[in-house]
Amino acid sequence: MEDENAVSDLALLQVRAIRALPELKPLKSRQRQFIIVYARTMNVLQTSEITGIPWPTHYSWIKDCPDYAKALEFAKTVAGDFAEGDTYQRAYLGKQVTRTK
Image (cartoon, rainbow, N blue to C red):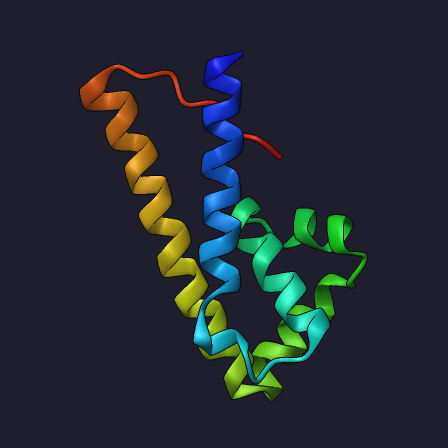
């Protein structure tokens, strides 16, 4: 149970970190929502399913909205930092890290 709480806390920390990105401020609510979920899933189709936003819309935003494209890249970097931390925990400290959806 303690491990599950730690995983939940980590997931919440990641979502809060993504939400706090100043790059998200100029975006529309749906764009922010897509990026926040995408940063957790790193999968466009899964994010589309969770948010109810059609996946082609994501690609249109990348093409037509420079602010969206910039925020997406920054969110990917933050998500990568969290993934790197998870990898370190598993590889070097032998900790079991469970991914949540």
